[in-house]
Image (cartoon, rainbow, N blue to C red; front, side, top):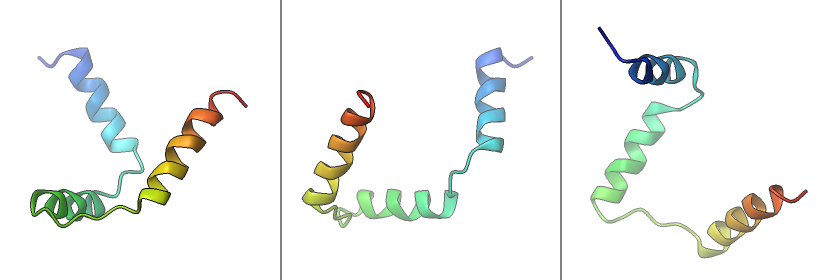
Length: 55
């Protein structure tokens, strides 16, 4: 018998909009040390997410 947490996670993954192929590519790039993120893009996302809480 599965726990309710496990069942909830499985249902969420079934319904999510996660692009598993993209996730796999990003994980591989991170593992290989070749994932590059623009610092400007990162800063913009952080600011947008923080300000989104106050809008």
